[in-house]
Image (cartoon, rainbow, N blue to C red; front, top):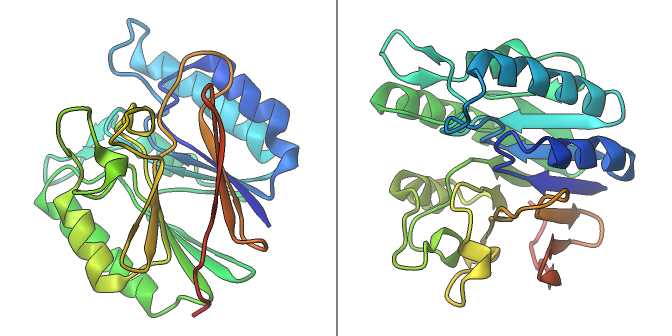
Length: 243
């Protein structure tokens, strides 16, 4: 089974075009947050309408997972925390979103929403605790921010990852965590697109200009991860035991 992981597209429509054109090459495409761009001059509601159409086109060709990032929030929760309600509303057959899980042959995927404060953080921890009892095969998380202290969150000057996620990784020990958020980590000498924390492989494909997004191809049969960017290709063998 071949999975394609991208993140931080930030309304780069040519990169969405690339996903549509290549969707049939993969059993599942995972978009790990920041589909939209808060810094764009284009109205947020217009961005949502356009991206929803792209998601529908991808879903026609293969299964799709979408998690939210810090650029995707369009609503406020009862606790006055940012929520990507438009992503929730996009849920349909073949498209799993924030809060969902997906059972694949030999793997269980937890889709983590962007958390913006104590209420959404607690809700996500409840989700992970619930999912922990249902895992069959390898456990994969999709979580927009990378874990603290890892080269996958290196900003060029300091580590700026998520301390809470790091604690969750140590507690639950998933097999893989797919993140993004820190755009240049894979391109810095002290950064990386891949790291291992205990038994957990963590990934960040980064972000690049041009029509092709940086991406990671996970082959769950061969247990390999391949990072593809303007710098070329890098392949890592993943020595992860079955649960």
